[in-house]
Amino acid sequence: MGKIIINKGYKFRIYPNKEQEILIQKTFGCCRFVFNYTLATHKRLEDTIWEITQGLVENGTLEKNTYKSKFFNKFSATKALPELKSNHEFLKEVDSNALIAEIGNLEKAYKKYYQKSKSNHKVGKPKFKHKESSKKYSTNPPSKYAKPTINNGKYIWETHIVSYENSQIKINKLGWVKAKLHMKMECIRIYGMTISQSATGEYYCSLKTEEEISEQKKGESSVGIVLADNPIIGLSNGSVFENPNEFTQLEQKIKKEQKILSRMMPDSNRYNKQKLKVAKLHEKIRRKREYNLHCLSKKIVNEYDEMALVTVKGIGTANINTLGLYALSEMIRYKAEWQNKLCEKSTISNEHIQTCSECGVINAGKISTDYWKCSSCEQQHKTIVNIAKNIHNVKREG
Ligand SMILES: [Zn+2]
Image 1: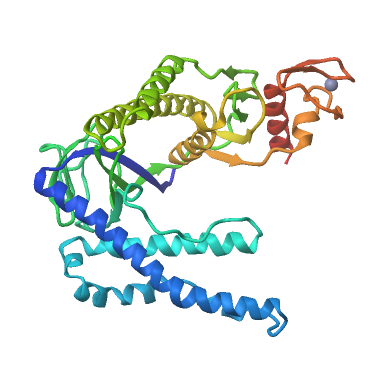
Image 2 (image 1 turned 135 degrees about the vertical axis):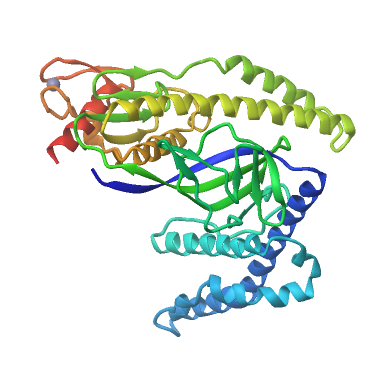
C-alpha cells in the first residue's frame, strides 16, 4: 500500500532562561510593532483610495470599483521591512522571520475581510494589535534539512532542531531552549514554529510537521455524527455521549474568585495576584475540557473509517461556547486526516431534523429537542440520534 503525507501539529511547553525570556518578550513587541506599523501605512494609503473610489461608485461617477485588486500584498509590504529596520534599530535584535510572518498574518486578515465582504458577511477590517493579545509569534525552524533517524521503525529526533536526549528545542535567535517533550514525534519534517505565552505566563512552542502514513482501506464502517450543545454527541448507531458535568464545582470556584477580584483595587499587588489566580483556574478548566474532547474524538475516529458530521445549535440547554463544539468537530476532522480516514462536515437542514429515519416521512412542525414520535409509523425517536441516522442515510445514498 502507498504512503501519503499529512500535516500534524505538536505543542510543547518550553522553559526559557532569563535571557531567552527577555528576547521572546522583545520579539512579541517587535511583531506587534511591525503588524501595527504596516497596518497603519496601509490604512493611510490603500484603504483611503479604496474608500474614495467606493464613494465614486456609490454616487454614480464610476461604474465599479476597479481598485480592488490592489489590496494588501505581503511581498510589497515585506520590501519596506529593511527601511523600517534601519529607522528602528531595535527591530534588528529579533528574529527577522517572525517579522515577515507578521506581515503574512496581516495579509491573511485582509484576505478574510475582503472575501467575506464579497459574500456579504460582516467581518471587521484588520485591527491594531494590543499588548495583551499579541503574546505569540511564528517563525521558520532553524534548519530546513533536519530529519530524524529511523531505527527499527522508531523515529529518533536527535537533530538540529529537537533533542530528546537533552530535552530541548532549538529556536531561531534563542538557541536551545529547555522543553518538556511529553510526546514522541513521528514526523519526517518540521516546517513551522510558533512561540506563545499563556495568560498564566507559561511559554509554549508549537511545531508544524509533516508525517508519512500508510494509505488505509476506506469505507469499511461508516457513521453519522451530530454534535449538539447538550447532550454533546449523538451517533447514528444510537450511542449518545452526554456532556460530563464535572466542571460545575470548578466553575463555581471561578465565579467566587472572580467576585473577589472585582472588589479589588485595579493594578494593586493583591489585584494582580488574584487576577493570576483566576487565570490559572480558567486554564485548568480549559485543559480538562480539551482533554475530554481529545478522548471523545479519538474514540470515534479510531472506530470508524467514514464519518459524516454536522453541528446543531439549540438542542439542549448548555452554553455552546463552553463546550467548544467547533473545537471538537475540528479535532474529529484532523484526527481522521491523520489516519487517512474520511470525515465530511455538512450543514444541518430542516429535513435532517424532521425526517423520520425509520419510515422516511417528513414530520412538519416543530420537533422536540429531546424525544419525539413519528406521526406516520409511530416510532419513538431520540432527536439527536434521529438526526445522526438521517445524516448517515443521506451520505450512504449520495
Ligand atoms: Zn416514521
